[in-house]
Image (cartoon, rainbow, N blue to C red; front, side):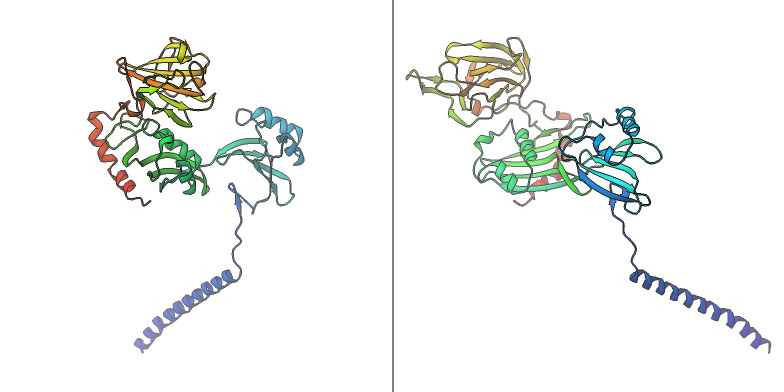
Length: 413
């Protein structure tokens, strides 16, 4: 009898637990079915503000429109507008408003009272004005996400055409031209020259907003591989570009002093002069270009002559800071303001404009280089690197770029 009572005592709690467990499972099933039938409301968000709390309206700034006019249409008081324009001028000057920019008006859901104005000054900068409870303004800088992208191509007509056809931006074309300005004459690009590139792409809210730095590039020009890697040594915060041997991509002289149409005459020890009709040396390169085309100094140095020089017309001579190198710029139209004897100029600085002064048959620049007083062919010079990787860091540099170079080489054209 005692055994039977004991059995009953333990049987009841087990059954009760089983009953409760089944009930809970049934409730979960019903809950899931209800959630399937009635899905959760998903609210859109604009710059972090949800439609659950606000009613949104969007528009763009019209020509001649001011913040004052927009705010008055929102029924914002003159005193509030004045406070925004004076008390928060150091945060953002509301006079800075530009046609075509987008803005959002946020109103409360209960009374449709104007609560906020969000002005999209740029893809990365938002100006938020608040009108509920208190009047204030702040600028929100949206985070930029950097993604590494890669591309490759073969040039058929021009670098520009190849990049654009590969959906690469004009800004990237310019960056590449600047990167190789010391080593490649881009007016001498050959059909079937090719390139591979790894670069940074910038995104805001998954929207592409522009390119960042070129991380690595391989340009094959006339069958010659020209590598470039962006690199900063442990002792420097600034990054520079170097080739696969650690030589700087920057050279002491640029490959050309201007953007030209064509080379109309090359370096020669015996050339028929187009005006005098006699054979004589031509120790320069003639770059045909329209009158007024900018002429820049090909290297850092001091102007040692700037004036009229008979057959050379208006001419500038620069003594450079490396070696015993002098460059000459002939047949100029006019000098840049401030260019005179004794002035120091930097590489790439504008010094004059193309002209046709002196003995000249048309607008062009006659560019000449002298080393140790002797003329050399500007198109065939082996210009030294500006600041190569120091010998003490070269082994580390070569190791650091190894993986990047491997990834670059494996990009398919």
